[in-house]
Image 1 (cartoon, rainbow, N blue to C red):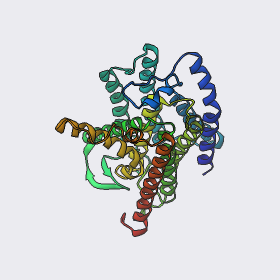
Image 2: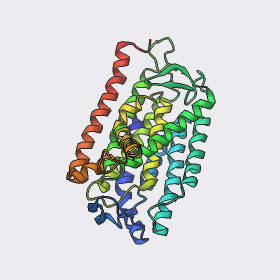
Image 3: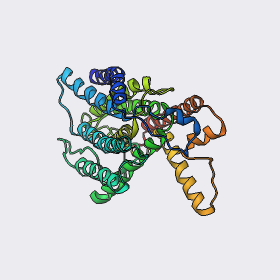
Length: 355
């Protein structure tokens, strides 16, 4: 438990005090955000705000995780390292994308094919490695079963699991990326989502099959406590960054942060065996992504739009809601969905559905 608290504290402190340093550095180099002309006109005032701040979140998370292990003299685990690999790898893809945007002053960074290749290499590498490295009880970081709160009876096999994992990673990365359109929206939501995975990891550790194989409700998760440490480091780093990213934002996370956070979220869901529960816990990201899918699909069929603009938060901007109002209300929705997800997780234990 001390590791969890240390990871969260170190991530918070580094991000809180490291972000203003990043703001000065990025401003000096002219790495400012480009704003699309077809978006809400209120966003034009944000042109030039430093971007690529997600690098601070990544560094804060890594410092929180490894610092907590050094301070407690505990070994790292394969599960924790794999989630951090996924986060950092996708963050690097996002960093290159952001850098090209600001260096070449164009709203599109990496070419679609190059970005897809980069994401695919990282995601597929994670999925393949997650099925290896069994512990003494035979548990690997991930399993080839579809999971809800624990593994279901639906086994995919190694190849289909890699495809499924890739879809999950791509979906969560895009969901967080689409939510990162208003000051503090994606960051604040991420704090709540990662906090839920801290609780899930701690609960799974206390009721783990590695320590009590005879308990019919135990969780077959390889390294639950270390996954809670990863989630705590992410939560703390996002909290510290939110201080500077809240409206009016002094810095944006960019694709560097959104791809990294989306990847970390998918990695935690895969390694804690809560793949489908992520639809509830990360429900706001799902709703925002669905708004884009529905808008594009409906327009292709009818040449008409359901929303004034997608993603969903921009629709409410054009309706006349203030940015802060939208962010706070969306945070409330995110919090309710996180609470619902945790309630379902605990209810499954209480009712003995895992037996």
